Length: 362
Image (cartoon, rainbow, N blue to C red):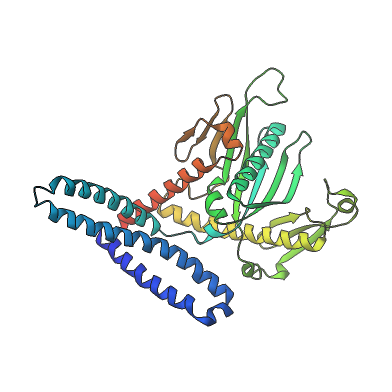
């Protein structure tokens, strides 16, 4: 094992003991926010420590097996143990390296997903509806809760724009690479001559900031407008000015919500979306500065980039950022996104690991 990694493991061992002491104190439950922070860190540190313990055990087995090689009667058995221990140690070292990579603090957060129809008219709006279904089904598989924040349905079905909030474990970490341009190639339902059309939608994934971050917005910087909601919802939603639109005057960022029945709930939800958009603006500006120093294929989340193509005649999905092609489009559209999400996460980890090793070798 590389010296820097072994030194890190010793630090994790000490930190685990420290966290276990802190969590055992009776007064820790009086500060629930701090308790949750420590508990989350304990889970991460314990996972690293368990693999380190296993690595040390296999390292001990390896050393013992190497001593057994001196005995001709035990040499064959010793060599088998050496091969097995070496293989497992290599695997464990790789896992430990990946676990030590810097984590995006936003990965654990809930997220807002915004889907907007782009070029392609009615077909683009229909595709926006298909993407909403795909993400909703994926969330169901993961046990996440989905709610529509705002929607603008199109006449033939689908959406001109739809915003959803997703609540669950590691939502943003799984979906953050979905931001960008999504292109579809297929024969639209409105096409009478069977020609394949190309249209597109844009997706933006925003992490939901902590509730405390919302108070950083100066109320004097907000313009709040109410209006009569449209769409489904019965008589109540159409007869009262319950829909809310909030504009952040310094940046011009706008968020609205009309899904709830009350003006109060819509205002609260719109403020959450607004805060997430402001947070994403700051995040994008930081990413742009980082990109000047280190180019990343999947880290920018630029919504104008074409990141993926959905080719229905060939049953093919291609993610252009990592040259991933899967011929299982229909199952993917039903929410089977695991292969795509895991490939993007693995690529990011590999890129971070390469950058870390480069910095250590300088």
